[in-house]
Image (cartoon, rainbow, N blue to C red; front, side):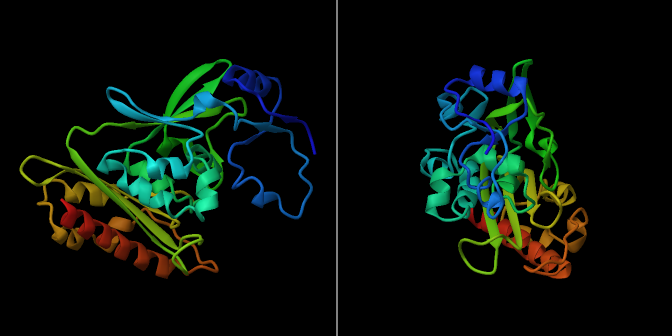
Length: 280
């Protein structure tokens, strides 16, 4: 094994990254399984002791989720309905042991097409706070993930938090996942949806994202535009059409064919819209 560092402050962690490349270790729920059966010879920077990267707080115009916030902490947090979709996704991240250890930022940085947390974060317009010795920056989750397992994180950067802006209208959200079984499964397709409600009971804004059907999760902006101004009811489901999924590019693999994934994604989108229509 290479060098192992476990800094106690963010400044120390950033100084180490500025000196040479390290593999970042947070919860380890992705890092360790990926190295089963081969020597673990990388230099590792364990950031799990950085308390500044923990905690959930409410700011004037956004919510801030520390990068080391675990899925279990998110599930138990007192958050408004706009986070219901993200909480439902959190319950799908492995079993309870994984939820206790796995971090939200780790799920994003791993950049798997099947990352459960990414579609709901896209629908929340979430942004990432990034820190390096040379300064800080903020980038939308949608721009941060480039492709399958590829992100815009520079070698000397650490994700410090996830920011979720507060919407101007009452907001509801949900998440649906299809797998070969109910729990402990990589998804065949998954859908997150957010609706913002206007005072007259119509859709003020809609955000729909589909995961496991492209190299990275995709927003369905054609459908989002079609939903604006529509009365909020279960009938919203009928608005979703195959053409609205044109951005998706699913593959054939052991979990399902591309054709099946597209059909499943459309069904999940319609179910998500019907659920939000009933709940509003």
